[in-house]
Amino acid sequence: MRTEEHLIVEIDYPDAKYLAAYHSIFRDLMVAEDAVDRLLSMDTNSEENRCLIESLYISALVSYIRGFTSGKRAARLSTDIFSKLDGAEVVHNYFKDIRDKHIAHSVNPFEQVKVGVRLTPKTSNKKEVISVGVLSLDRICECHENLVTLKRLIGIAKEDLLHKILRKEEQILDQARQENIADLYEKSVLEIVVPGGLEDARSARKTYT
Image 1 (cartoon, rainbow, N blue to C red):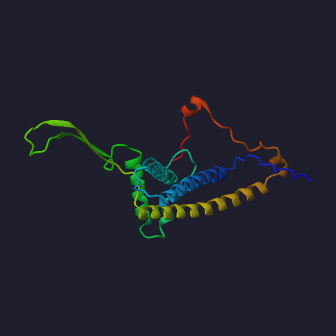
Image 2: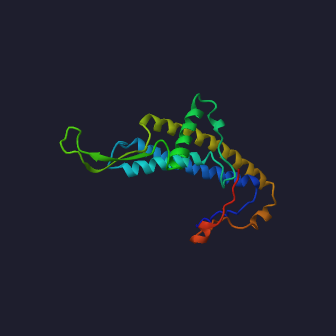
Image 3: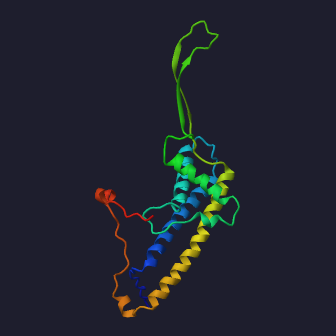
């Protein structure tokens, strides 16, 4: 016997937009955690994997910090979630500073390029300019200990979010069960429209603060 699929209808409860935000943030944290796990399994000093290492590092920081910043989402995480762990908020702010000053802005203390000219040795009989010399410094990843710490912060944030998600789901279920069941069946089927094209990319987004 074929089992009929359950019907999922769209609701416009105020709590629904917060639950959607929590799920969105949780997905970001999953990306951040996966990126950190991959970095922990790699030799982060490998020049051969430099591009991959830096990409994972940037992904981890951006995905993690995005959950704590204002934006389109109806909710965001608070650093209060770290209050029970000594020093956790300080370390969180360290990673936020790295994201803000290193990832978001290309000119920063962690990215330096200096240009000079290469000369023949001072002891050489012939003093002349040979070529241009360039020295560069940039930050592509954290040390192993810092990556472990970042993973721990992500875990705390995920745990806090799971509690928030469960509470919101219970509140939404309670509200839905108080409605007329016939009215619920008349609501639109839940769906997502995939945006596309330049115009959608250019359109302004509503921002919550």
